[in-house]
Amino acid sequence: MRPPVLLDPALRTVEEVFERADLERLYALTEVVWGRDEVMPPEEFAARKADLFAIITGRWRYGAVQELPKLRAIPEVGGRHPSSAVLDYADCFARGIRVLSCAPAFGPMVAEMALGMALAASREIVTGHVAFTQGQEAWLHAGNATTFTLFGQTVGFIGYGGLARNLQPLLAPFAVKLLAYDPWLPRTHLAAHGVTPADLETLLATSQVIFVLAIPSRENKALLDRDKLSLIQPGAVFVLISRSHVVDFEVLTELVTARRFKAAIDVFPQEPLPLDHPIRQAPGVVLSAHRAGSVARDLRNIGRMVVDDIEALLAGLPPLAMQVAQPEIVYRLE
Image (cartoon, rainbow, N blue to C red; front, side, top):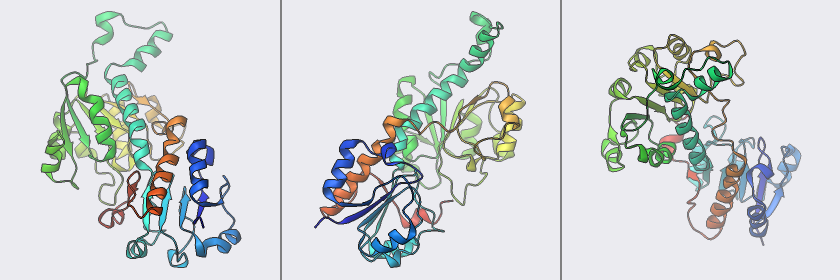
């Protein structure tokens, strides 16, 4: 008998997450329950919850895991582990329920966008394009008075998780010197991965390009405050690509507007961003509407990862494709 698996991906859709072949694999391996884009009605969930092997979901909305006696896996398709405020991780860990995040699927997409935005800001590609469309372009040397190339620069990573590890090889052709600040990792671990460990102040003061790659935690809210952001050298590029949670965004807006340094920003404290927010008018900034991780073809890697890990668990093997929740981490996440 195939184990029942709830497929309830909202706020995503089934088609957004799964290639047809992966969806067919899921149906062949399991009894797919629900399998629609709309949220499963509570009364229908109540009728099936006692025998569910896994719940594939975009957001945890199923109450206490104590009421799910056969549950063995929670593969999420939204992009991050459910908050400990809504999911009882202690019970999950005690019962061996694997809480799995699709975050690794976003690494290549976001890393590519981070590199593109860094290049756009450092070479002032957007500014140059706008000036050209308005007949105000500066030719040759005059158009490069405040630009720089990425080759041989010192580059800083704030956070050295999956996103940083996807970005690192993309920077290799530029022969950059990589600094990394991550208080959750030993300095020896960073060095073993080819980056130079650095304290946050040194990284900010010496990097020509700074990538904010840290996940939001209870410890790093507005970590990059006025004192920290003021350390960034004039003309450097600050790329905010993971979460705005890490930055005092109003101070960032103030400093970029004053041309203290350049910025490329894909994530914001409020989305959609208010039309009157001053960052929209800041000179030289490259702005993107949280688009780094939402490429249609690549999002379907999520479905492949989900099915791969469900297949592994059914075979009595550990999940390898998705990110497994760790007790040392999940309670610190914001």
